[in-house]
Length: 424
Image 1 (cartoon, rainbow, N blue to C red):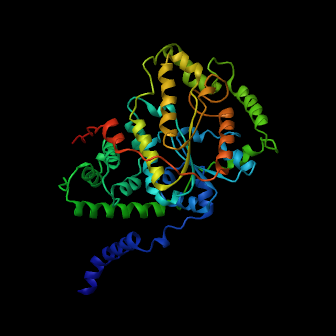
Image 2: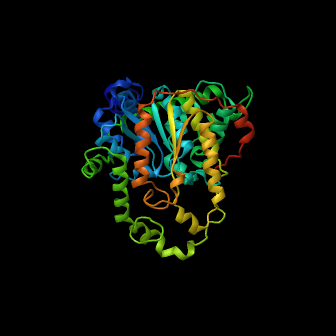
Image 3: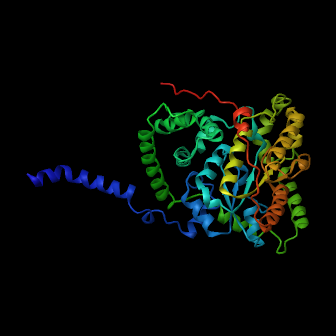
């Protein structure tokens, strides 16, 4: 009888015991990340790296990795890209690229918040993109594609006071379908935005459910950190050979001009010829004066940027924000509001510098060729300018003397939003 019972239920019990061991067993058995994996991850822009924590934390422990937050422009690797130049000329840092198409301030805020003290005293770079600051901010598909449940649960389960900043962050997250579809996370965030002791969901039960979800996500990150694909190291090593042996930024800029000239052909927008032929030429006539109402001076992204800056303040990182140019010829052709674009640069500069962060803008180069490979993505001369800035930045003493953000910023400037309801 006992043997029969064991034959029936034994495999289930063993499977359950294995599950519990994997979930609650010693973290050291699962979370070790090798230096080789970190090196591959630094240029992979792999979603498991960007949405995880194990590899990022290991990179920060190793000392010489420089986190660079951004989006799709980071993948434009040519011989002038910081990952190439820093390695060729032994600049004392190795870029760790933290961005994918569609990653914007809100995703980066969650990552920085989850990394916490791992970023304390570290140098960090944020490459903004003007197109992040669309009138509606980050789109539903872009946020959903880059959303990290691990980072979000870390935020939602923090044992801390629910300040206006924290309530605003929770409200922003609740405005996205991917968050609303996770019942436990949604309940945690709804408790955060509800003032007073009476919460819509039982705090103890909701926290218990949240901690279980977090444990599963942490172990998932431990396991996924063992298998990283997409490293650009071979491409970087190939590009090293095309650079001169001695570092001279004027020489690099001249070489970047020559490289740009070879790539753009004769199209009127100074973009890569392949890009022009495929993306613009087939609909060029329709694009003329097509974006007269486009402006980047009003957007929820400014509030998300503030969240990101406040996260950096809390962890004590030394951060420089870099603003790239937009292709001036393209701006003229689509009829974009130039005053609105000028306001964007002025507004971001004021917001960043007024709080003590370092800031560098390439807006003055928007009418100069070879700074961008298409209408918005950095390349060639643009990277050379950034290479110079980063070389100086990493040598400067760490500075984290930031201005605190007044609660009124979140209470008045960015009022509560109505979050979406899931369609049943």
